[in-house]
Length: 317
Ligand SMILES: NC(=O)c1ccc[n+]([C@@H]2O[C@H](COP(=O)([O-])OP(=O)(O)OC[C@H]3O[C@@H](n4cnc5c(N)ncnc54)[C@H](OP(=O)(O)O)[C@@H]3O)[C@@H](O)[C@H]2O)c1
Image 1 (cartoon, rainbow, N blue to C red):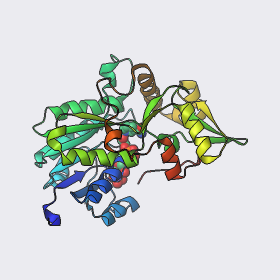
Image 2 (tube, helix red, strand yellow):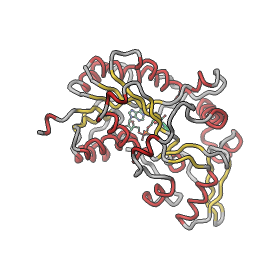
Image 3 (cartoon, rainbow, N blue to C red):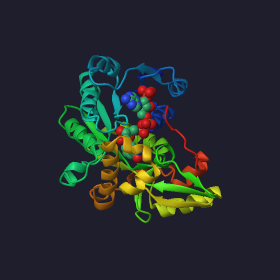
């Protein structure tokens, strides 16, 4: 089959942790062509995607760019859609997600995969504030009503959060890991860099099988205590857990977060939701992604592969 006959998948947020995984896996499968959306075609990550064989489309994920987006989606057989990190009180995530979906449909895309999360507002009767979950769920509801075949993936907490956003600090000879969950609360975590691609490849390879489905993506279910123990074992460094899950703990370790009260409320709301209701709804098969892609990294493998030893690091583009 010539290169041109392979189905083309458009990937939004292509330089993100999720997006990079999707682009690389689709291309490595040699079953798809990829068009990678980015705001910055000359960034190191965009150039890397180009070297892998992706076609680069410069298009910002912004409201009011419907025409540009439709043009960028033209000719694509499938679209992987995601919304970038958007901190409250900014309220553009839901309209942006809807705009991406509308543009993909208008361009004639055959199947949409959207990276969503649970509807925290609905599940908690409005008692927990986590708009970056609820907004994605409302986009998913919107996509369900569009005349297009679609599937949803739902990623667990990223391991990379502890490295990018909740970075540890040294105290004497001990590394303190302020974690946003209670020490013994086991929560689903995932490595977005190795886990997203395989599930998206599976869906685009069998769109009829996954039409209408919502699929959780999980590396393992692990508590902060186990994460710290594993960190010590893998790195040989002395480390201790610290509470960053309630307001006092969070602001004690990350006083800079106090500059945005909405952000603080959102972090606390998300964690309270996860602890009190469970991160994923009970209807999901939590083993699905691990069965499909056993090579997805667990925390120990993530530590060994990344070589992370406690430094603040960015996994961004
Ligand atoms: N952290 C978690 O535990 C977790 C769990 C589940 C879901 N999520 C969701 O995952 C999404 C983030 O995914 P990710 O971590 O893979 O993304 P990421 O690595 O932070 O990358 C975001 C990408 O989006 C693009 N982008 C376009 N417009 C942007 C904007 N206005 N601000 C920032 N980036 C923009 C950037 O690419 P260019 O510069 O190339 O355009 C960037 O590479 C969020 O919606 C988050 O809620 C996170």
